[in-house]
Image 1 (cartoon, helix red, strand yellow):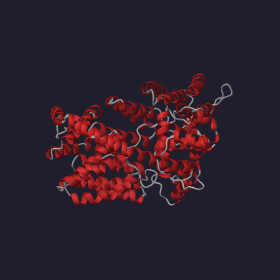
Image 2: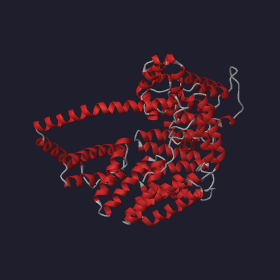
Image 3: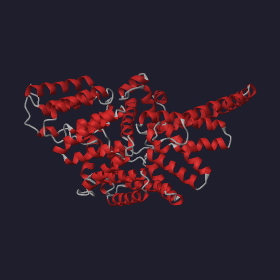
Image 4: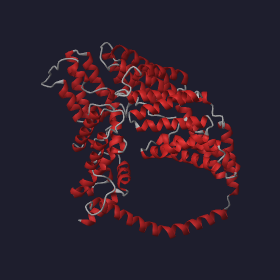
Length: 572
């Protein structure tokens, strides 16, 4: 079962101003460290300027001979490379570590070790990642016990999810559980505590200890209910449904999963929607309902093809589909799912170090390869020239007959959508205005619906996001959630949750929607922009490519930007 594991990149556990308390600001060339730092973030999106400011910071730190300032300077450089040049980012993180490991700072060098470990995990360098996590916990143990247990949780997740070392992960979760029980686990620590409870339940489920799984699922659901953490209420209920499948209590499992699935779909928790379909398929398999089992395993496959990601836990549905279509002699479908399964097997072998420990018993790869080749040859023999001719003729008739009607209806839909954008006073738009979004968000906060974040913090973040939108900071092409969180003096977990729960979308969708709304306005008030190429417009509005601009535009308004511009020209 996949759960809300903490973001392993911990740039944003750091508060950008925490270093300012380390020493008195020393002026150099009339600039303070604060001023340099602020100028650095003011020039977000301009790599050269930001690098120049980082170097100014480093030069000042070198002159002042302040090691912790040097660490901060190298940190400013590292975050410029984190996404696009991870190897270079690691080099600068090593410098952060070098200049901070002899300081009793609350976060450095622990956070730098953690960030380095995250980058190594993405490169599948598991042993090196674990070594850096261990160094992070050693550093945190001396200066920040709360952060020590955050790191312990990261290690547990890595061992459970990536390495398959479930028993070792379980010991770490138990240790964290004891710690958080001594804290305000229904207050500031509620999210961390419930995360640990889920880790315990998930480990026990992997170890086939169904009674302990049920115990922690019930305890987690109770805590999530008390703290009004609706997301974790759903996840604990789903996890227990999966546990009931393993216990062969199929009807109980179906009841539990069917209750949570609509809510998971509503909040767009895609990986756990996929998990729901998988366990529904397993439950229907147990009840002997082949038709519904196939329906749900096909939904798992559909979501995989969209997400392009799946974990070993959810792949056995493919063996069921392969056998099912083999039994009814549907060679096309059988070949389709064999091909997909083999592709997944290849990806899993690369990405999961422990795959050899969880042998894929359904099929071995050589067997699949042979069966795939046999199916291809069989299908080729059945195919004849006359069949192809008939198929082509039928397709031509259908295409010619339907194309005209399709184009006519498409133009009507496009025009209606265009009018909804340009004439919002007469046509009701499908998207709430920003002020309505803010009103809804504030009502949620007042009603106490925010989960795991103090209400005052949510208010502050919403106000900062309003300024962020007003300043047009979303137009910066290399913007990331890490950079925004640092700029807003928060962490990625809080920022992501506030955007998810108050804007109703992911961070990426939030940024893209802001850019597209800005594009809509500018294309109407600045006619000269309509003569720009799509690539030039993409650059103007913060996108990296014409394709990404067009895709985001269509996703929000269901029309292409080329059509919108053409219709604007007709109106003038």
